[in-house]
Length: 283
Ligand SMILES: Nc1ncnc2c1ncn2[C@@H]1O[C@H](COP(=O)(O)OP(=O)(O)O)[C@@H](O)[C@H]1O
Ligand SMILES: O=c1ccn([C@@H]2O[C@H](COP(=O)(O)O)[C@@H](O)[C@H]2O)c(=O)[nH]1
Image (cartoon, rainbow, N blue to C red; front, side, top):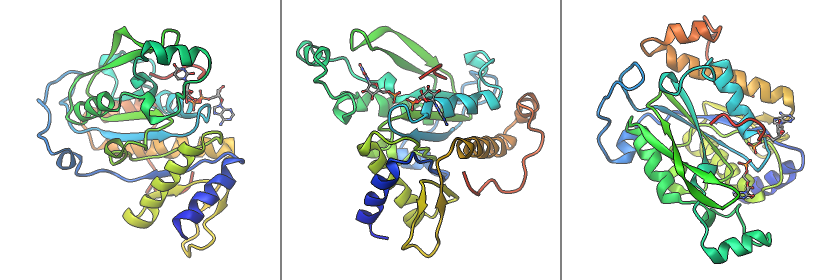
């Protein structure tokens, strides 16, 4: 299937809500980052290491935060102190940049495009992601939607085994895109985001080879390895379960994992999880 066809296809499915999910592990993240790993500080009870990074992308109100929140809940992370969390979630929204006075005036008139990559401080986002992948404690900025500026406060994110990052353009920036492990588009209104996600699906499906692919309504007609995709709430739940299973499998290999899995009510993880799939913000 040609890329243009994929993009056309994505536009078609965008009307119907899509759920797409692809998981690939970036085994050599450290290598990719071109830097040494962490200081191995014991910050939250276990040695810091390169976390499993999961990008969750989709249009505004497509359910990104909800999916992350559910994953956090299912893994029993919501109730934990920040310092004890082994799965953490950050939002790309935290990396909106402070607007200049003239941009603010435009924003007040509804003439500023917050869905454009220029609205973000991509350098800061990349720096924070690099530190996270190096197993360091990081400070995530707090963005003020009223003043359209970064506030004085920030949120500390401690080294964790798994980091979820959700946002409309998580996969836009090439430097951040290559660290993405999962995409969960559902929702329709942001064509740019949808297209980026489809590019990402394309990469996973045809270049890297997927471990899990499950996506939009309809199917890749020209592709012999047809993969059906659907976008119902039920499928969202299936996707959440699969991600939880995948994370659980990953955590099971870490020390102290059993305690957390017991807490989350996940005592065993069946076979390979490699199949199917702003309310309260989790971050
Ligand atoms: N699968 C779903 N089915 C129906 N409504 C949903 C679903 N997922 C999320 N929502 C609702 O849609 C709204 C937007 O979800 P949210 O997770 O905040 O989206 P995002 O983080 O992508 O902006 C919320 O009111 C949320 O409760
Ligand atoms: O100052 C701002 C910054 C962003 N926005 C809008 O917020 C959404 C992001 O929402 P998600 O729920 O995280 O997808 C984005 O579409 C921006 O347009 C804003 O209104 N004001």
